[in-house]
Image (cartoon, rainbow, N blue to C red; front, side, top):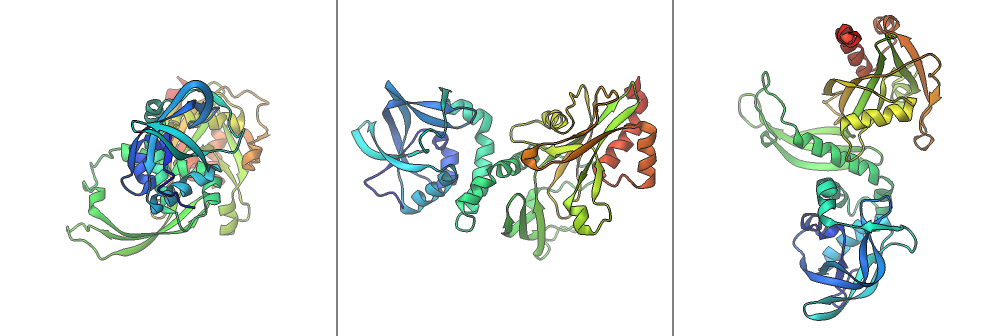
Length: 375
């Protein structure tokens, strides 16, 4: 149902960020300052967004939007994953009282916490949520809002990946100093969107002779940035490895589709790679990492996959008896951990039993830096 001219929309939270509002609405919106008497803008407990909290002698600052039917439809789509519905309110403007509507969650969905600050939210989450909103709104008309709600976490991790990539200036000692301006994205088609995304793209790329090639079609598997950490105890000269089932090795036809790996996991929005490494070590093996030594950051398969990995050697205390089976039930993880001497690690690397790329890279780095780490 689209808003009518008689029912403008009052917004009090994240959509007051004008860049985010423009992304969601699809262009400039007619907006003016307004206040909602009898409420304060409070943090939703354990969330980054705000809710209205009824308080006498308070007034929530916000914007009153006059929307076109298309803009109203776009905002409804963006808010639908949160189960928001529009309810009538009376707001005050410099021209007096105005009958309007406001998005409201189901009663009791979130408890109020402290006062919410738009400026603080913009500093912490603004860039991330603008990037996530760009992907969400690109799916309008093809991806149901319920599916967006189910995969909101991975949408944000993909947004974090794009922010990570934009923040890095790669060296060009051997490569030509190309840039994204040397590639024209002719068309992008989203063929699959669930936990992962599969996009087909038509690209026209500048060749080494300076000319622009004819557009070519490519398929790209869009994932999230991830981290691996290989725990190493320099006193005992041993590492902790994990073993778990991998669907991809099964589908390839591997006769033993369980893989020896370093601890690994996707970067959550707002985390540094180091924070991800420490969190995953706790979740998968119950380990508190000490110093983290960065191995490298790299693409595992850049021909078709956006996954960008950062690997670490993590110094840890690895006494006898700490191995076992763990993982998060919420992620259907069944992970076996084991303690392995450095010599055994090198032996299984040579035998081919280690066939996981990040573990191969980390093991070779450990062999190179072992004397330093033990000193």
